[in-house]
Picture 1 (cartoon, rainbow over the protein chains, first blue to last red):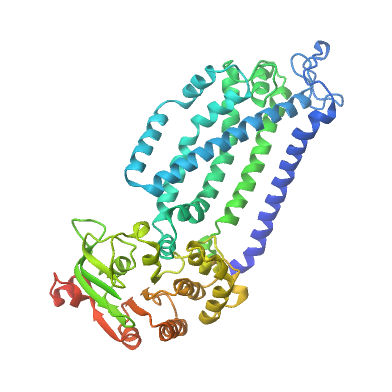
Picture 2 (tube, rainbow over the protein chains, first blue to last red; picture 1 turned 45 degrees about the vertical axis):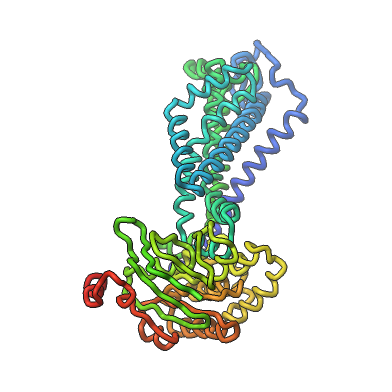
Length: 285
Length: 230
């Protein structure tokens, strides 16, 4: 009975979370998609007379150390960082899921060879490998994406592999085989949908990680060029002024990084419950 | 219909669960296999359903020797056996509605056009209403889910049905309902049945003949088998 009483509340809490997260993400999407073409303002307009101004009606987020408007810089930065984060995380997840699922579904030698390959890649620090990859190209958005994607599929491959290994010994896979399903059909219809929540969650959690890698590479001068606003670049260039007590150039890009990420994670959690429902009796344990 | 000849199977070659067991089920016959839990009868059922490759011995299904197990078995051979497992919870993909659960074998074998008719027909036979068919496994009871699993096992009209402790998790009325569904199907189709379980009363009433596990296990004396494994 306690469970029955709790269910509507849990449903409502989940709805609130989904609605809030969706609103935040819609706002973020609108901001990064609409502000640049509509605002017609130059985010790179330097105004040395107005440098490091605290937030004011003219500059709601204040200005940076060369007098650029931080609100505009943040929106442009979020745009670039999200692009890098989302594309790199998605690519890494697709690679990791494919590798992990195939290794586990085939098992035996395939599994052993593939997983030793994963171990070999894992033994190289991924920032180092990332630097090696970006260093081969001119600085820009795409080398950063490629570098982050190629160094971050390993953990997803491991997660997906262990998940598929546990799924493939379940009786419902036996039932599918007995019903005439081919190996391909079992992978596509039963195993991959079963690991999607984990893979999706891994992808979402990798977005901020990818954004941080972008900033690390930018800091080393190998990532995005410094004139190009990205949240990583903004936080990096604000470090000096933070020590002087100017908090706004650090705080606002930081919030721009944290809030969309939390919203994404909130949606991912609700998605997991939707796609992989646990029984009420399990939830009560 | 089914011949298991001197089958040895298990999960560790050095310590097989099933040793040197032979069992035959004639076409149309129903055989009950009785044994205590943990004795290996489920493993034997999995071998018979082509889901577990034995370490030694041979299996003949509908007159044809079995050469491959799991994905390596030809589709017609695999689908000639319908299987109902003990735990409906684990044998149902949690993401599929009961309707899709029952329809899966038809989709796997390229008989999509039959889905609507066959699912409705079987749902009526096993006693699932339309509203239940749209629910997913977590939203139905064990009994309702096992009805759907039985429907799934019957949807391709197998010549042999293997029920591995099908009713162990269920109450008496659901047990009776499921047994009568199986019997109605067998009466109409002439299919054979291998029912595995530890409920002697049920199996003796249900099946043409029952076999005790100890009688099959060639390596042990009956008394020792009961003492060691019971």
